[in-house]
Image 1: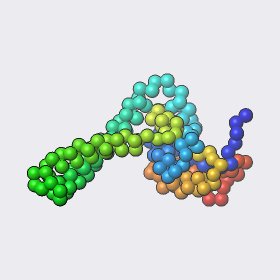
Image 2 (image 1 turned 180 degrees about the vertical axis):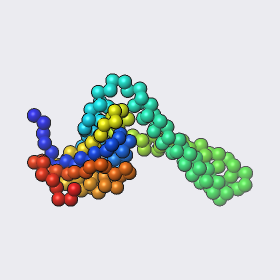
Image 3 (image 1 turned 180 degrees about the horizontal axis):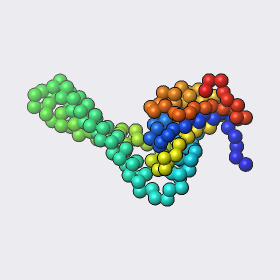
Image 4 (image 1 turned 90 degrees about the vertical axis):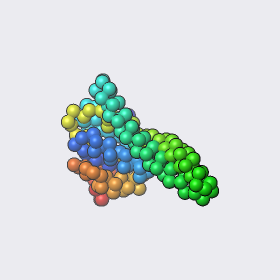
Length: 179
């Protein structure tokens, strides 16, 4: 028999991209990924799809973007720090070496940060790269923690696109006051 949690928030999205942004927002604001689930007809469609090649390709595209942005920002910041540091401590000739070292060091660090930034905790996040077949997708948070429910409601209201439907209920299915 499945255990029932004290509180549930359900945010309905028309596509996987909206659901993916909602999950990322929840995780970024401290909601445990293990409490986040993907439900509804779109999630069932994505889970039943045996061909993961398209989902893997979409995930890799997102990961590549994040890594390249991180590497670019890190390289620019590293080069700037290298130029300033080179001017202060090494003089005119040292500025070039420091800038090059900063470029590669900052780029490498940015690459790592960009890669880590894409990692999401929940299994639901991985499923959002699947094909929902045009069916709606529900991002659900099941938790015993009322503070997480309040935080999730606040954050989900501000997602872009906003959910088509947003509800919060207690273990008995009664709506909570602030939904």
